[in-house]
Length: 136
Image (cartoon, rainbow, N blue to C red; front, side, top):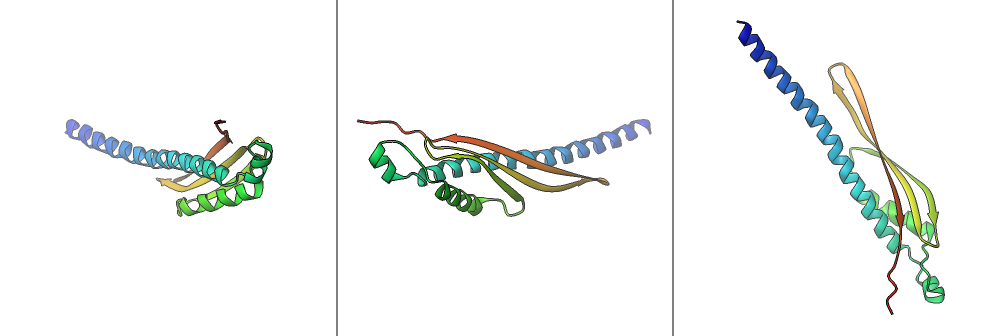
């Protein structure tokens, strides 16, 4: 009889471990996806915000702040997960030389394990500098 109780406890422990792994996997997978989404949206928005008139006159890269923010928010909002809430903060946007620092906080929701509820807020910070190769 004692051996059967050990078998029950082993099965219960296995189910508990699988549930915990599924919760952690869903959080970490969305973190990676969000990071690459933010990175690609930032890079594309910086390229879209280049001021070509300034570049033609002074041969230096410069971006337009308002155009960058508009392009980033448009690209980011088109591809986000609708089940989460996001908070986007722009810290530094330098026009020349082009540098952007931003932070995106995402709330993955509330997970209930037994009677305890846990929230996972994930913060992704990106610093991006736009460079261009000088080809003659």
